[in-house]
Every structure is written in structure tokens, then in C-alpha cells.
Length: 322
Ligand code: BDP
Image (cartoon, rainbow, N blue to C red; front, side):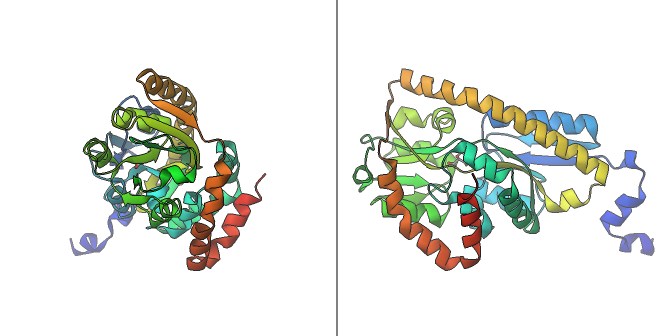
């Protein structure tokens, strides 16, 4: 019928009784089974299935592609759910780059105070406008350097190292200031690249260093904690806006419950992963003088603010969050 064919899918959906609105969603996750994020995402899918007409199928282990590609797919609503680190989101949604500035947060609790408060709303709004609604923040601890050559104690130890970074020019600049050579690369390619010597090292939290097996091929882990980047459980804006208010509330509740689980599991997993890599012979050292690294980051901030003057107040808001 001509009239029907002119109606948008959304208008049709609205006119159907709720019970006929069952929807199939697909979700992207880079981590393997058993990882805190994976367990928490399965909980999310289960709770959403129980409390709404949405059926979420989660795809773990990055089988649906790399993170930058998945971010684009959620933006286009080709995928409806994604569990993203804000690091690779910066090139796509510039506001989110603020949390990828080295040493922007003093520690993980500071990051949460900022993200759970007014600063978090700035990121939520910027992301939602670009097609991605962050429903809850996941813990990702802090990222430290690891490599196959030597312990990193001072910036001079980074000199000449080939270091894999997530796909974002900010991280390339960060490594350049330390005298290393950065290679942006997909997470899934890092193990082989370390093994074959294409790169000497990378940087990540304990759970990812351990779950990927990178510790087997890069046996020095140096606690620099230069990046503390939040992660989010996200839904495509188009999928989100198609939901009625009650369903949105149920999905948001499931996301918050999932984040609570993730944060609890995270704390335990950090300790387990550290114990596991140490038992495997990894040499862990703490970086005594983090300020020596931080002091070299001036140009990273200067370049960033020059390119994004409107984001200077967001940096200030984070710094002034107690
Ligand atoms: C992990 C993050 C994941 C990133 C990965 C990476 O949880 O989202 O893809 O680091 O380094 O910690 O690419």
C-alpha cells in the first residue's frame, strides 16, 4: 500500500503494540571470555533480555573487527552495542580526546569523580551527538609501558623503542616526547608484532597485558601509569532514540548494574593478572619519578589546546575536580 510504504520504519514501530516490537541487537567487545568486561556485558545482555523486548547477542574477542571500525559501526547503528575505550574514539569524536591526555587524571578515583560528575556530562553529550550514547563507565585501571628490551625507569629508557599505541595521534605525540617511535596498531596485531620484533613494546593495564599473552613476549613491565582512560558501555544513538522511555530506563539500569559488576571484577582481576605475570617471570618495576615523564608532556598539551581551544575549559574542569 502506497501510504504504508511511505511510512518510516520508526513510525511503523510506534504504531505496533509493544509485544510486537521485539528487536535484535548485536554487540561488539574486544575482550575474551572470562575478562571482567566480557562477564559484565553478558550480564547486561541477560538483564536487558529479561526486562525488555530487546534481544542482545554479544560478540566477544573482537570477532566483529577492530575497535576503530566498531566505533564507526555503532555510530551508523550497523551495530547497536559497543564496549569502547575512549582512546581510539578521540580521532572520531574530538571532545573525548581530553581523557587521553597523559597524566590528565591523578589516579583512578579522580577519574571516576570527574566522569561521574559534570565533566562526564560533557563527554556524554558530545558522544550522543555523534551517534554513540554512553550508558555507563567501565574501569580500565591505568596504562603502563612494557617491552622486551629493558625496564623503563626514566624517560631516557624509552629512547629509540618502537612502541605500539592505540589509534590516536595524541599517543604518537606522547611517545615522541619521550624519544620513542610510536606505531598505531590494532589490538589484535600486537602479540605477533612483539613476537617478530616489529615493535619492542606497548602499553596497557595488567589485565590486558596478561589476557593477550603479551607478557610472554615482552617481559619488562614498568609502572608508569601515564594514561587513565575510561571505558564505556555504549548504545547507538539511533537505536537508543527508537526506544520508549520505559525501555530506555530498563536498559540504563541494566548498564549501570553491569558497570557495578565490571568495577568489582576489575579490582580482583588486576591483582590476579599481576600475580600471574610475575609468576611467569615478568620483571615488574615501579617508576619512582613519574614527574620526569609528566614534565615532558607540555608539548602534547600545547599542541592539543592549539588545535582545540574550545576544550581548554574541559581540561581545567578535570584539574579542578577534587
Ligand atoms: C584495553 C582496552 C581495549 C583496547 C586495548 C588496546 O580495554 O578497549 O582496545 O586496551 O590497547 O585495555 O587497544
